[in-house]
Amino acid sequence: MQKKKLYWQIPLLLFLIIGTIFIIRQQHSMPYQKNTGFVFGTIYNVSYQCEQDLQQEIEAELMKVDRALSMFNDTSVISRINQGQQSVDQTEEGRMFLDVFRLAMTVSDDTKGAFDITVAPLVNAWGFGFKSGDMPTQQQVDSLRQFVGYRHIKLTGQQGHERIQKSDRRMMLDCSAIAKGYGTDVVARLLKSRDIRNFMVEIGGEVVTQGISPSRVPWRIGVTKPTDDTLSTAGELQTVLNVTDRAMATSGNYRNFYYKGGRKYAHTIDPHTGCPVQHSLLSATVLAPDCATADAYATSFMVMGIDPAKEVLDRHPELMAYFIYADHQGELNVWYSSSLKDKINE
Image (cartoon, rainbow, N blue to C red):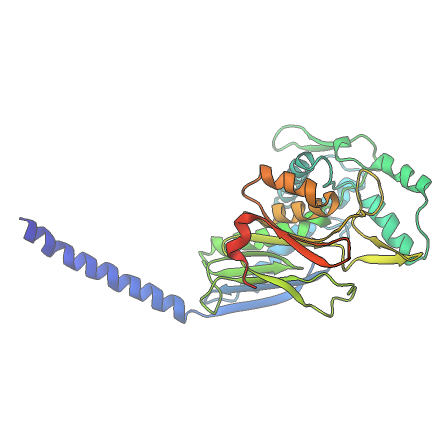
């Protein structure tokens, strides 16, 4: 009786082995498509294993994100909210805006306001002020802080009838610190919906990966060494991380800064003080299950500094971080999560 069972199992095992070999050969022979373009004021790169070129579909998804979150698009959902509209569109773009808004509020609460999508007026005052040679006065900063604070804006209404309520109509929302990460997630979801198992999506340095690279190894993503290189021409890497089935985002002050009166000012603004941050952290790289979350926390950590950021990481085992900071002598040092150790490929 046992021999008869064994005889019946042999064809099944052969079928499974042959099927597995066929799938593996098909995966090896299937090409990787590579698409690149311009979106959100930066460059995107997508590499994915597929018989078809999906660039048109990819760009169609990115344009939805643009219509949801771009402040440079006067008709986007966020622009119309900034112009005074309260009701949120019952469209796919409206749902995208709500996804990002809710995540932003969650991260803001978790970081005690280090992440704040209402900080745009202060960012603009410091950024454009420097370019014209004038710094904002303390009086100007204090005046603008009246319109900054995530606790002064909230989502009301029932599902399908959501509204954005501001304590002051002059408040402005700016999701630029999370939009690239969210856009990367949107493209990754599109590829997964097409049953694509191996891909890398990158928008302006924010990355989502799955599976393996064309070299049949885990995706390797570089972390740029912080240098006073405002044009980003050097591109020297501090380290390379093996990133598979994860999202990664990096925020840093080493590219966006100005010198004034012999002092270096970063573009990262602390929402609590209304002024550029002044601490030793130069670059924060965060790995998370999704890129919007990684993007938001990377920005938060640049505001908070190393020690408060470590406290947040202790509460979130799903997050991993790689920090580059300057010591008292100005030398570069690194700190990273213990769970990240086996992913560092130096």
